[in-house]
Image (cartoon, rainbow, N blue to C red):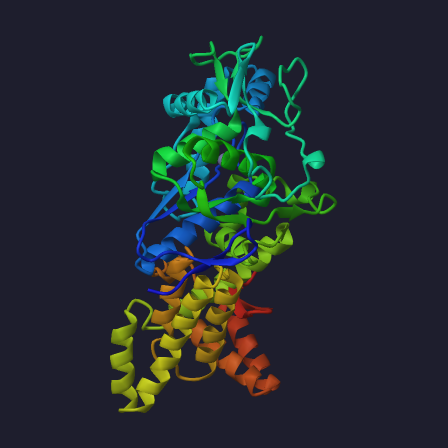
Length: 472
Ligand SMILES: [Zn+2]
C-alpha cells in the first residue's frame, strides 16, 4: 500500500491519507436542470478514478457523488420548458446516469438524491436552529454566519467580498452574510416539502451537508471534492453548517478540480454541441473523452474543443494498436515475467521484464503523488515507445494494468475487429524503429506499404498510430 498524498485546498499543503481508516470521499455532483456537460464529467471521472486507484492500493474506500435535484435552477428551467419541476429533475437525473454510465467507469458507491434526503436535511436545520446558529424568518430559515467563528477558512476571502449569490429580493435575512437553509414555498413553485417552518424546500448547501453525513457517517470523512467554482460559497457554507452542528470538522482534505475552459470563438457551429457530454461521447467515443479528461492535472484548468478531443482520439488509437500488437496483453505481469525469462534465457529476460514492472510502479507512484494523471500517462507512453524499439517482456501486460487504473481498460480488450491486423501493427513497430535510427527512407517505404494495406499513419507528440485510409 502506497502513501497517497492529496493537495488540500484549505491549508494549501499535501496531506497523506490514513491507511488505517476508511477513506470516505464525497464529491458534489450535478444540478439536474439540463443534460450534463463536460464540466460535470470532469469531477465524476477524477473522483471515480481516484476511488478506483485507492481501492487497488488496498485502501478501504467509499465514494459518494450526489445529485442536486432540488434547486432554483430546476424550477426556472421547468417553468421555461412548461413541465413540472419534479418531472424535469427525474428526467435529467436519468439522463445523467445514462451519460456518465457511457464513460465505462462504473458507478460511485453511493449516489444520493436531495429529494430522498429531506428528513436528514430537516433534522440538521433543526439542530442549527436549536443551537442558535440559525433562525426562522417568515417561513425561511437562515444560517447566522457571524455565529460561526471559522467562516472563511476554506476560501480565505475577506468578509466584505463575500457575496452569497442569493436572490435577496423580499428576503428576511438579518445580515447580508447569512444564507438560506430552508426557503418557504413561493408563488409558481410546483413542488414543496413539509417542515417545522412550513412547506418549502432546502437550500443547496444544506442538502450536501446532510447527504455527505448520511452516506459517510461520523465526521470528519477523508476527502470532500468538487469543482474549484464551488469553494465559495458552496463549500464554505457546507463547512459552517456541518461544523456548527456537530462540533467537528466536515472533511480532512478539500480537493478541487479546475474548470474546463472553452474558447467561445472556436466553439462555433462547426464543432456542434460537443460540450454536452452525450454529444462528445457520440462523436469521439468514451475512451477519448476519459483520456482527454485525465490529460491535465486535475487541479489545473483544462482547455476544451474538438482539437483537444481529436488529439485524445489519436492517443487512444496508439494505445489500442500497441496492445493489439502484443501477445502478452491478456497475461498478468508475473506470467509475462516468467515467459520473458524463458524466451531470452536467465538474466536478460528478467532484467528486461523489470523495465515493464518498474514502469507500472512509477505509474502508480505518479497517481499516489496528488493524483498526477498526466505524469502517469507520460510513463505509459514512454513504455510504449521503448517497447516499439526494443524487446520489453511484459510491456503489454503492464500497459493493460496501467490503463485499467485510469478507466481505459477496454483498450486492451480483444478487437471486434475493425482495427489494424497484426501485419500492419508489426510494420508500424518497424517504422518507429527505423525513425528512431533516423533511417527515414526505410520509414517512408514502410509507410507506403501500410498505405497499400489500407492504413494511414498518424504521427502525434505521443508517437504514431494507424487509422483506416480514406477511400479504402
Ligand atoms: Zn455540494
